[in-house]
Image (tube, rainbow, N blue to C red; front, side, top):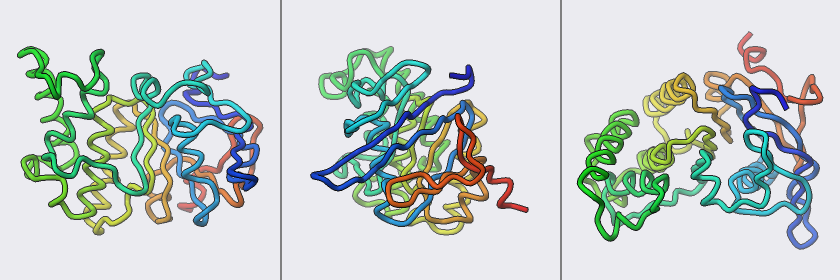
Length: 249
């Protein structure tokens, strides 16, 4: 494994009651990549994310993160190790304010977990978390909505809030499931700028997306999936994928 390789997927296969959702998928992700994954609905893209994030266990194959197998690790362990994700359908605490949702994400990275959220944090911990929340609100353009209940946000801003919660966990690898879904053209442009900013900060990103203009604009590598397999033009044994710069010419 290269020193630059952050994630390696080896022969991932997933069956659901005889249905093959994913078949012998292998690739690597380098630190600093913004990797786009495209393909028709039902081709295994979200299943792949679920296996990387630990929501599912593979039928066969393994997932390596920073050179170590994490195939049997829980989703909670993976979050603390620096793997965060968003979902195709938003998963928020809709009755809580925007600020409280992000604070919960920050607590997930704390040694004591979310207990301080319910029982109260020390004044020093509270100040530190407040600074982190303020920075994320500013970075994601949610500052003016900090006191809104999540349920009152538009769908596009709910998706943005889910991204903000993921950032609260301080990820090294961020899995984004359709981050541009439901976004206005201006909001999509802002999300794209945020993705570039995160990459410059050292966050590696994988994204599932149907908007090819966003993939071409913001990703440096591209995977195509079909029928649970990778369709990889100009495949190399260890990396796979094609450069998105090829698609801009």
